[in-house]
Length: 308
Image: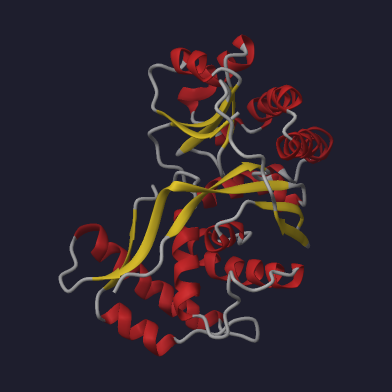
């Protein structure tokens, strides 16, 4: 048995802001993927994954409701038969490893599931997001449901607000010098502690003011520029966003990268931002000249996501 493939995702813009109703833009990232498989003799990662699915099964029993029901008998049989999630998506890297797993379980076991082939009305998208939020909360404590939604639909998704999400058309890639890239921090980040730090910061009025007056405004401007293909304006706004994040989200940036982050802003060779909740994993980079950024960041592993 081998299920369909589900891909990683990258939240280009909107991390943390979407918790507070700013815009967000997520795109599928096809370099990493996962699928449900079954094996008779489970060892190593497959065994760990199978045990995690057993715990997930217990959790799914508890969330069944009017919103979603599953073929739990079949799921239990398959887990007992050695089902696991085989995935190349790095865990704790901010690219949606649990999202792809949630999407694959929903796809295979949800009863009356909403399929990708349907006319995806706003109501259906919101319902899917609600279901995925419930399901993924097992892994993160609190989930927006966006990662699994992105993985399930394999489409770019524009988040206008909590109640308004839609598939987005993004400009096709060009063979230009500019790029969005991933920088590997070579540390695993955990989502829950980072979200907790953010929620504590939200108790501070100054932080809330910064979020609505700077962070959200720059994020929304970046998304508008990206979708319209206004590359010059985009880099100006990404630079502003990078500065705001360095000043106000330091705990989410691994210590070893504070100077690297600052160097990008000062040299204009590249600008960094969080990829997911931060704390480790990947850092997202934007550059108008990828070769220049590569030279500047020659001690680090980089991977291209999108070309301008």
